[in-house]
Length: 213
Image 1 (tube, rainbow, N blue to C red):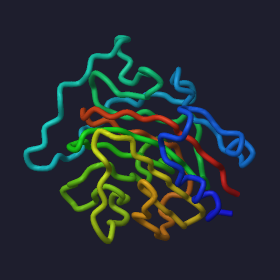
Image 2 (image 1 turned 135 degrees about the vertical axis):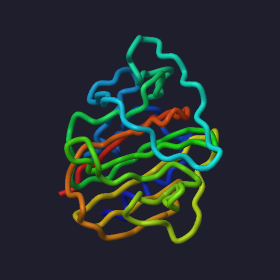
Image 3 (image 1 turned 90 degrees about the vertical axis):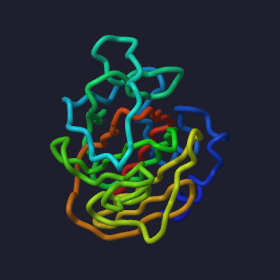
Image 4 (image 1 turned 60 degrees about the vertical axis):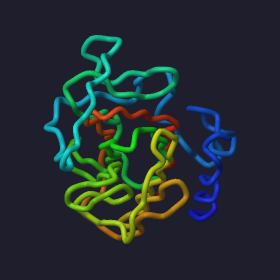
């Protein structure tokens, strides 16, 4: 069943309806975590210290928020961070075993990440979105847990898809159809999802989750 579901994920990004579940996905038990209109199901964290930057890496001037103090907003069906301070958008719910599909678009110099099983809204596993992380946990890696065996790159200024499976201690990360990690680790068993904002523009869409037993 897992292989069958992964094959379904390989459909081209352009062929999918934005922020909606297909009839097949609904039948398989997928849940839509972002409705494309509101931040329902998510909340903004308190300010977090910025992550370590690579030499010479400088974040851009943050885009002003349409709503004062918002820090995350929905623009044209896309989930985007804005303003200051830096921080995270966190799922209201906690998840244990699941398959997560999330699409993101950013520039080549982006520094972001998708966290899962983040207990008490801190820590957890971070799937990296950063081509040159100082400690070598680059795109497709899980920070402080496992590095990729070779270099993987997201497509700058285009839509990319992460597919993340957490099934017990079995963790699998797939970027645009390529498996970047397939490991076993039991450090974190359950927790929230977190989307990271580090002052580099990024947008998310089509956030879908399928619970596993």
